[in-house]
Length: 402
Image (cartoon, rainbow, N blue to C red; front, side, top):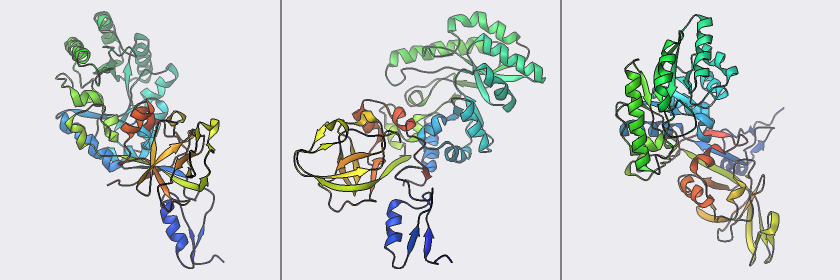
């Protein structure tokens, strides 16, 4: 018979610190079964903070509909939990990158449709059409194929016409619009309900971006002479925060939803942190002077050093190129510098100045006190890269970050 004091603990509920409390209770035994122990590393995400940031975008751009961009697992935050929370905020669409992501949005059972932001492959289009998902057309081949699919089903599909106003990634060139538009309008089972483009340097080059807005609005004006447009969208996060686009009635916030501003501006202070990356200390030892740490011995101790091993590595998304960049983690309220190279499953940090560090202690790698923007700057990359690189081996735990 099972002892009444035995507790089965699931990682979705208890953090490593809670485990230590349970273990310390007199007479209590903690039974860890397969897939029920606390993970060595995990992501804490705050959907309420994401919803707050969506409404910051709305305040910046009043009378503008919002396509909440949730691609790449909601920038590493967990797509399903994010979509469930944001559904209550009534976005116009959920922006995704591919059919697999659209299926995940649809599986949540919400009323807001997924919208595929890029070109679609021929083998995907029948499912997209049959599911009623939003999509763009960037070529006559796409348009004709979607029209054919719709005609076979006895229906009419509504598409967003993609324009290449400077990104060079997808869409019809403005110079080709005069020839392409009459052909598109003659397709029997395809209607144009929206027009979209993308800003490549909204966070860097104001002159280019303002000229791009002018080109986009000229194209919108030309298209509007032939068809009534329901959705007109150009700006992502940087565009929302820096520019006004009179012709647009929708925007596509991405990075700013997740608490990070791509540009320096006062509004950035209104964004709330949405993610915390945590890993457990697995071992603490004192290494003698002259001892190498990690592969290649790129770091050698100059004096006896208290070194903590932490259970996270590049297989989890803590990138190998973070090595040797002066990056710190937070343990017991103190910054602890990383030592040597990041390995597949573990990193090492100097805890010589932090008394009492023991296995099971939490190390914060990203969070309100360790901003992802600073980490990206140190590592020579961008916040998008870090967020979306957080791997599937990291459980996503929903909780308020305060």
